[in-house]
Image 1 (spheres, rainbow, N blue to C red):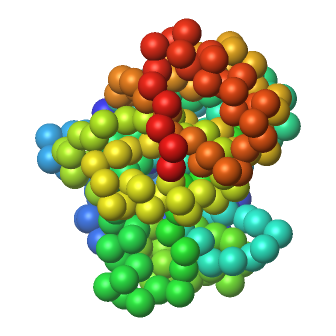
Image 2: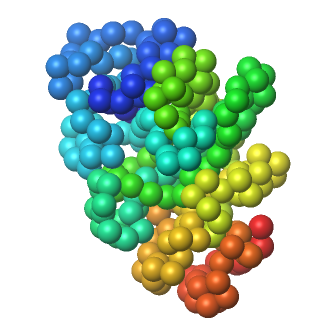
Length: 271
């Protein structure tokens, strides 16, 4: 089963889920979860269940106690201080402290090909619908930290965008693309660059490469060998190489991480 999760506390999440239900004719099930309606649709041979939760999505660390899934997709708002309109995708998990849900020093399993299929669809719809939004990967951050392939598709970054039905529809279609598109890609670890990494996003949109976990330049000084190994290993697809946003990193951090990657037999490329 593939599980799509939305939150009743999140306006963007509600709008995206509503678009998924309407555009793809999800059937309302007799069962409820947390007193909310649940919906179902079989898509390309996959049983897909859409469930609304009564808590913030980053605080759903125990969700796999109630559901067993091969892939979990959270549809969510995105908030930022810049407020720039953004359609984004990323894997959740904490490279350090668990300040926003999840577990400390634990990341979810990254479904890189599914995320890339979502990213491609977001970029395509943005152009076709002339949406005034950036499309981007985000780095790995916030909870939950799950032992299931997990991704967030997000609409941001202010209440104006969270209420944007056209943007919500774009995220809805891109979320379903993670399920319907069967393309598989060579998967790499991304290292360096800002939280919204346009350089790595461009690589994913113009080459066969898909990114799993992405460690931003702000996190690189604090990641140790154990975390780097986790970012290589906790992926649905095998990771054999790492792509560095080279100039964004201090030489000492870059060299330290490269030493660990070489010990893991992971090759290094410059973005």
